[in-house]
Image (cartoon, rainbow over all chains, first blue to last red; front, side, top):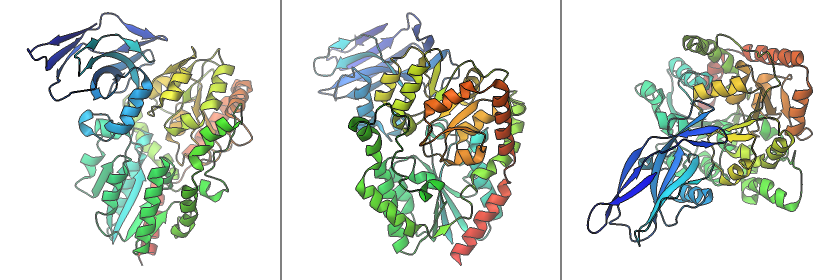
Length: 130
Length: 380
């Protein structure tokens, strides 16, 4: 479902490829999102984690059986293992930053994976929060 | 004269009853040629995310700030120039966090000291004693833990001190605190055409059967403050489905509710989503304790879904006595039980009464006239 590909010798640039292999259905709701690639420059990050998350889409869902979602990647001091850390991160850092494109916190559906900036270790465990 | 009108907008969509504020703005601009009108609309996610037309449409005609509930940005607008009059709607003081309110009130006091005239709508909640204390209705336990959880938000002494000063600030109070709400009938007339054009609703809707499913629509703080009440409702009604919708993200409540199989969380819904959720549900729970306008409840009435509302809100005033409501004496659970024990025909009658009540409201133009005469009175 998720591939991490470091594509320079210093391992500063990483390409994250997310491929949806199966429908993500929870409580009868199908969480839809598009396959995507994210390129991340780890060069300026000595510590912390890049967390790859699945959020409610900026365009709200319009069907009660489907839920439109999108992949979101953000740097955080902590690995986001639960919804509370994401909430704290939102309160501390993300509010009002227009570039982030999140004027209000959107529903966090799942953690898709993460990269440890220090060790370059990757984690691709899909962990649902809904 | 420079007049700043601060409005909490609910621009979920350009087309819909939610867009009534646009008519209000438009009415004021078109009618007032004496004053310099400025508008500050504190927007929700919907208008920011999708850049609905209001800025584009109105930018040429008047000075319009459209920002979020970020104090620094609000302060910037308040300091932008010397305002002769500041007119703020009561919702601004009840929607958001205490720290926002404190800063806002302090600034209002400061501006008043410097000679700015202040106008605010006279929210009925402010008339009551202990209004800023959460009425502990519907809690299965009133132990210390719950009390701290729910009541703590309103217990700030500092906050209460500021609130007491507000009686001094409210120097001009509009005659009818529901002037704004009462424009809704007029807006509905205007928006009905749009509904027709997208073939959603041609008229007020009444459903055949009101015994199918349930809906909790909980937005922003309403969900947290009614947490245990809603939880009790969910547990008592395991045979019903709960569709939680709304734009506020609270992990504690979210995680807790999602443990129940009969609950699904839908986050923010667009206009079409709201229509669909109204189609499948027969009750729209609107647990907000501070709701001067109640657009969600009003829309649900138009769509034929019964809203359950808090009695001491503007919504109750707008929808009338036939509403299903909860208050200090009646819990949300009791109100929903009352709904399910009511015969179908009576529900339909009550809904029609609400719809009639809604459609009888005075015209937008009247509301605009009343505000303009108030402005004239203040600046003289």
